[in-house]
Length: 166
Image (cartoon, rainbow, N blue to C red; front, side, top):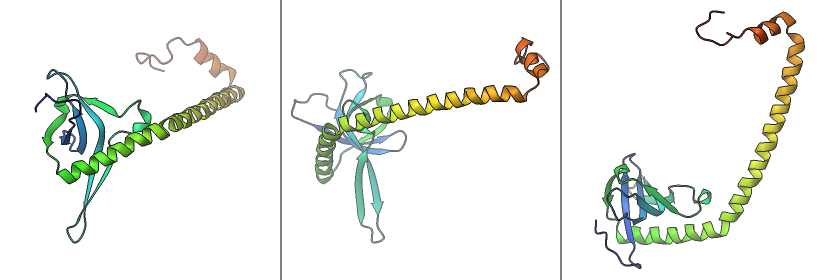
């Protein structure tokens, strides 16, 4: 690939990943061969063929952009099977889609992160409640178990040692 490009020239390629996925993305190549390749707003290409051999194509985010600080993803070149040249129509579709995704990230990104913080608080409360309930059940179970069994586990230093037969 030609690694020289001006600031306004965008390299848009279809890429077959080693996993078999087909994606389309703007590429930013590293300066050295061992540098990772950056995908800018990568899209997974979903192709469906209709019964009359019509082709339907959709683009979906390759990664959930809402979880990222930007739409760049770096990947080692060894994960790529090959580069393909997309048709001009496919490039135009991708560029329109990518611009919309970037706008959506700007518009909804902070709202999405706020929702994640809200979910995190709920999960923390649920975990705290679970631990309190677990502690309560542990205390009530202690009443149902004889003192000799509890004493056995508390005083037997070899309990849990795989070299000791119980």
